[in-house]
Figure 1 (cartoon, rainbow, N blue to C red):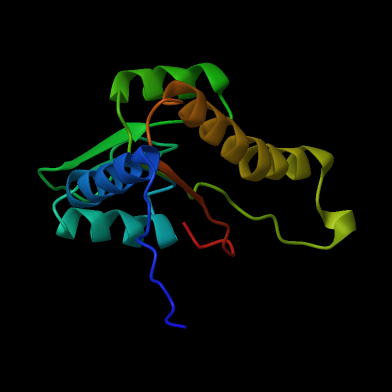
Figure 2 (cartoon, rainbow, N blue to C red; figure 1 turned 180 degrees about the vertical axis):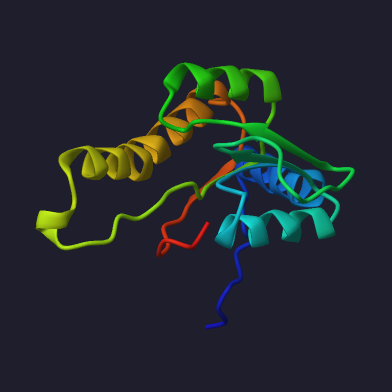
Amino acid sequence: MASRKHPVVRQPVEHALAVRMREIMSTGKWLVTGTSHGFGKTLRGAPLQRGHRVVGATRNGPSDMTHEKLTVMKLDITDEDQIEQVIEKLGRIDFAVNNAGFGTVGALEEVSAEEAKATFNTNFFGTFLTSFARYCHTFAQTALIISSTSPPSEA
């Protein structure tokens, strides 16, 4: 008995998703937090080389890198109101990379409660708030959110 090959039936949603992913992969807008140095500084260059628009967010605002498709904005990722304002101002964002963060190094007795709270607020709640705001703002859009953690770099 010969086996029958059944055609793959694609759902309209899957097709729309595939079309949207091709579109954003070719012309997408990126929001990258923590672009002043380290991995974020390196990461902001890759999409620019491919012709994408990149919004780099740093604690201090403008940076040393310039490019016609790069906008650098000041953003405190622990400030929920500021995150909402930036997301609203940017409009459509196709890729969000939560890269901002820092580390606290020292023995337990050398780290103050304030230092530990600041690290946790930035690395956990900052990532949560930017992801949540991005998700809520574009609930109907297809987007990719990437969150990264890495060892602290020297500023």
